[in-house]
Length: 307
Image (cartoon, rainbow, N blue to C red):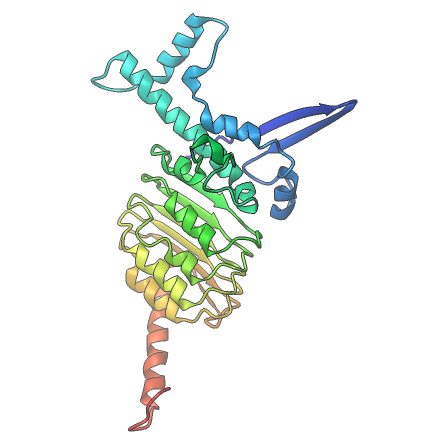
């Protein structure tokens, strides 16, 4: 069983007698819509996240130097063939990467709104670009990525490309939600070409209501599946993507790795008007789509040229 421990961040500020509490969390609060979460988190003092992205754990202080040493030794308890000092350095480096990537993920919506994804501190005078793309990509120990830009109307295909560029190299479990992102086009999905790690075992993508996406975008995504030889579970939600046709089933079936055990492709509210809930149903939907194409072709008159 995968026990995922969250890391939420709370900041308290005082203006006279008024105390303001700002909360930055991975998931929306109970009953909180994604848009409300984003509006609430705008008030968070994001300069604190800049500090989190630029500091290292080993630079921190401790009441007792002995306690600090014990903590570092505990972090570096694993590592065959290395000295304790080397193991500590490796463990701290991994922890730094994980924390900075976590701050980057939490900051992503704010960074999109303020166009600072490539340089989050917004300070062009320091000669350094604090790219949250690079911070996420550097988290080589990360195995799971849950990333949501749901109902974020400002999101475009460019923002999906930035996310694709930031995918860590050893991910096994990916869940993306772009539900309601009405500006995403095929180019956004095509930007993931060659970017998904071959280590991925579970891939879940929600494109519900992404009305600018057509078959070309799903075909590009389908073609990437063949580069995931360890994939066991695939879920794709495309409700209300009106331009999608049953041709998507053909390409998803064609490129689905043999390792896949669970499939769910939801395409009600599209031109395909069908959900498939297993490999077998996907294959049946693909055969039906090919048969329909063949039947349409058989009605073509001799000498007829399709325009």
